[in-house]
Image (cartoon, rainbow, N blue to C red; front, side, top):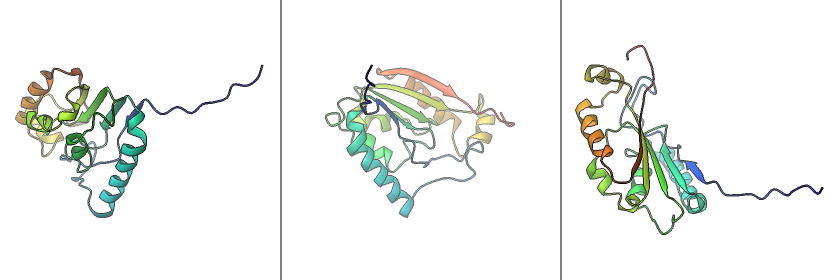
Length: 171
């Protein structure tokens, strides 16, 4: 029996986790705010341009980010605002891993190109009360999070809403 040849296939899913920019400085993740600038930001832009041009046109789903917050990123936020559903016609699902602070109705309204996609999200909270949240999610705001969760759960195209946490001494 002749050996079968391997035919390379493009990925069906990509996790775009190369920008650590975040609006929080959670002790479980980092001890300072991370906002890329200069050479770091330029490197992330180069990666993003490559991914947008060479990889995304062939994928079915994407995830943002797991290492920062996509709505704070100076790379991912413009990508979401200008999402080209013709260029990325194969993409049917987008997953957001976020702290939820910036996932607002106003932010989502600016992402018109993804409104037809299936949306899933995992909101990292690490707390079940305002007191604990203030300790483990600085400088996050519990009330903002609660308002945003109310908005997110009513999205017509939401297919999955997950809540995650890092178990730590303070929670």
